Length: 137
Image 1 (cartoon, one colour):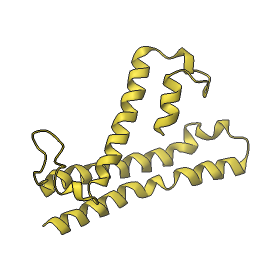
Image 2 (cartoon, helix red, strand yellow):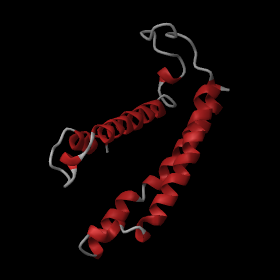
Image 3 (tube, rainbow, N blue to C red):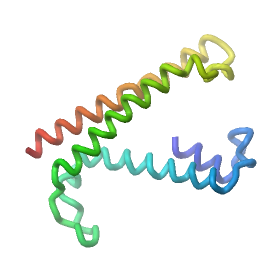
């Protein structure tokens, strides 16, 4: 999702209002992309070796062990937020005009099928976080 946002910010004609955005909107969109990609990268730390020992090339903290709760608490918090966020967002889709721009039933079913896997993101992150806790304790 970050790529279309960045394309929108630099003014590529992917949406009708791309060139009408003001600087604060552009900063918000880029910041949202950076936060999203950073969170995804940190999720990998729950299953990669660098999630247990900080890589040595990082100044000051390189080579130190990661405290398990320093990874588990943010991961479980994020999992809870994702569960609520995507459940509410997907449940609201029919009621907020989300489907208005689609032509027919097939388009509606296809878009819904593309968004439904987001419901699994929170529970899967929670499962990985709990497994990380089990392995590290």
